[in-house]
Image 1 (spheres, rainbow, N blue to C red):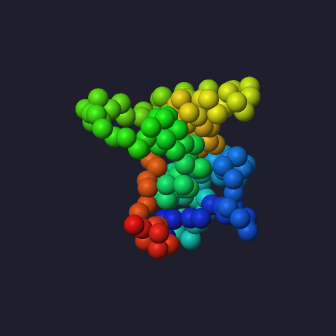
Image 2: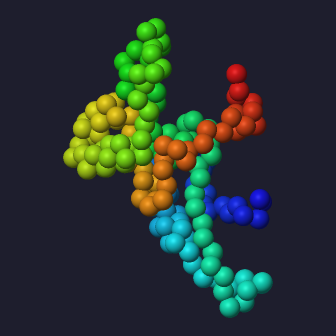
Length: 157
């Protein structure tokens, strides 16, 4: 429902933020979303003495925005020849898990150099995102790729 949606932030322009800048914008809303997930008592018109208000985040965006905000890298970051799909056996594919994603993201965050971070990105396909600090949020399962955004932009092929 429209009344249950709230805009929690905007990033300034005039250009799109770089991947390395996104976390600076995400940190303040993440702190507030963690508080709101547990619930905050707020007075409302229907309940002047206060009603328990809770909030949770869901990311719905195009693929480039999802990569930047959620810490995912390109599909080709972990496979040197991503164009050749011959011999692909779907039953042997290992899906990402929240636990592995968080572990790899923490390794990236603790890396001591940019070179080490680049290596970890290539190996694991993950970089740290402030969204990893949301206690309830599973970046693997709660990141929705929105094809309607591409239709709106006229970039669907």
